[in-house]
Length: 130
Image: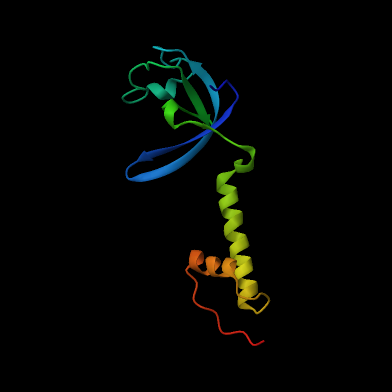
């Protein structure tokens, strides 16, 4: 399904929080195998990586940190979604800029403006004079 060098993403849950992760496939682990202990020693700290799996699996590096996620949660990362954290930040900045311009009377009310106010929990702006 994936090969070394592919960019993948998945969601993981821990402590009541869900976090989206994105990384690069660093190794393919065969059926019944476990990640290489010498190459991915961080996976063996604490309780270790767990039992071997009954299917091909993948070690994924997020930065320098290795993960051994369940294959059913992995999906190929698409180039349009290349940087989800940056995209979220740029959408927020754009929404804030549009809302500010509208608040200053530069834009007429439309659905996007309403969406910006709701997303930013902003107060209703003063009525515009035509």
